[in-house]
Length: 295
Image (tube, rainbow, N blue to C red):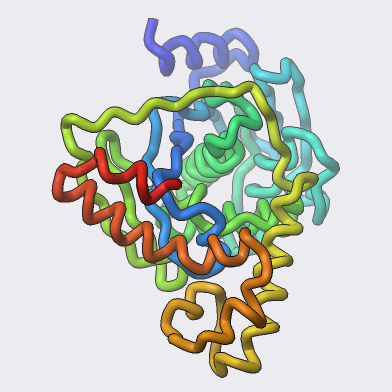
């Protein structure tokens, strides 16, 4: 039985009705780490592991969420959603619902059966896949238009404000726009993007080290703060600078001495250039040279 049919059968067994299935993929980032929140360039690719959501509308304004991964049922009222999460898996779908409503989307109550095949906390963006798949599902049952870029931005906003992880736009964007067998080069400032096919002789191998991380409680938020502090330090040397992306536009030798004091800020400031070169190598079928850029 394929995954969608299996999920529909499980939904029927739990909720007693038919449903519609949505899914959104996780991602691997080829190059461009910690550059999305620095307005830089990233080069992610969607992977073959997804978060799946079966959904059916209700007659009331209640959301009933069942997580297969956590074996837990959560109920919430769309008219009484909290403004902040409380550090549990349901923060991600409830945050998306709240953010969609605040953006002017009148949602319907619904039953949702959620099943994720992306390893949790493995750095493959299981949270973004959950947000995007739930967002698609909620908009669909409410008969509302789905703009993928706008959905990505709202899911990012939800994770920033409701969950408390100050992530950039990359994860949600690739989950909305990714294509099988392709990489996506994204300008995280303008949101212009280009999708191109990966070389046929290039295989992506992802190893799960079993080391888990939690963005909201880890050094991720601290690293973003560090980058913002570097931008403030550089503002006196580089008038008009908005993010570390802008450092590369200047030849001012004081950049490193004044603002880029740490390896993480120097890496974020130079990563966009490596991303451009990596995209060119992929397009010209030279994946063997990518390793030098990653090191």
